[in-house]
Length: 152
Picture 1: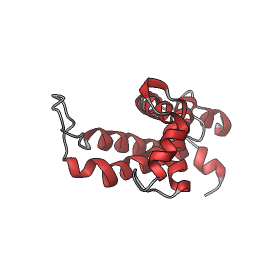
Picture 2 (picture 1 turned 45 degrees about the vertical axis):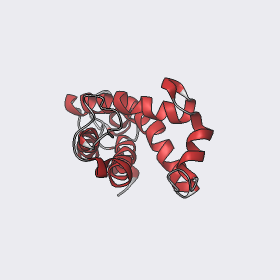
Picture 3 (picture 1 turned 135 degrees about the horizontal axis):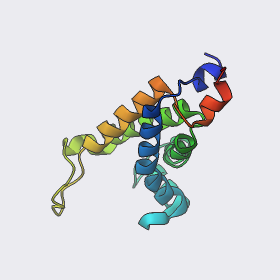
Picture 4 (picture 1 turned 90 degrees about the vertical axis):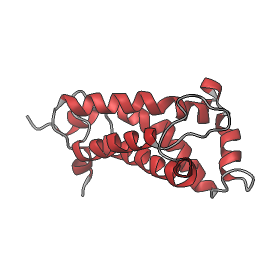
């Protein structure tokens, strides 16, 4: 598939709503990891945790990609530029989050804020479904993708 195939999208409103919703939901998590906003640790601390044996023990390259997916992915979605790539990156993060952290905690989030209870993966399933929808549909209306590939 060429670059036009990756960017090509119809002008529907649904992808716009999905990409903006997913961008708003994921961006704060990326901003925590990269900028230290919203009580996050910032880039250095997050890289240390993700890549250290006492943390998640991810290879440094994978840790970096995971952090960038949560930070840059929402920016791509918000602008509608390379929507499928941003959605794919976020989708990969959601699969990894389920497999490595949240899957063992069951389905439900800790709605009642029970001490010691961990978050399940229901949120991640929703984010993954939205990401998959965007991979299929593209950026839709008001996207840079549409502006670059629109023929009429």
